Image (tube, rainbow, N blue to C red):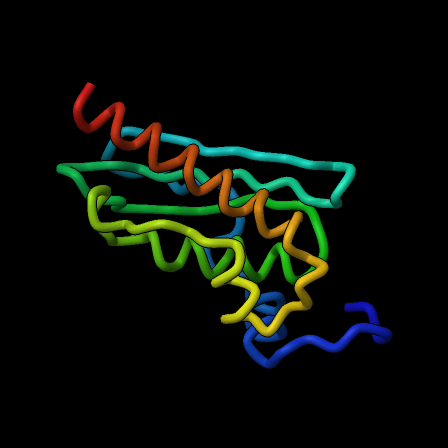
Length: 130
């Protein structure tokens, strides 16, 4: 991490462990993805999940960006894992900033996480009801 920037304890923990980071493990369910990028803002996020009987039975992410982006992606994947597609809720960039104690200047990067989450939900609903 950049020593010149302060990170909350939550960001430090998530960045150091990156829960749900990496490729989606093999398993039951239909695979879906949601991806967004804004390289000019310094962020790329791809969520991958498996949907079975209306639930996210597995979820993972891959991301490029600052520790805040990776922590936001990890936290979002963690929240999605095990949830129902209909009950997954939204991912709000401003809420992520508040939860992670990130500076508001990172809003553009957090919007990439929000967009990738939205794409994943759209794909999951399509396979669920398609």
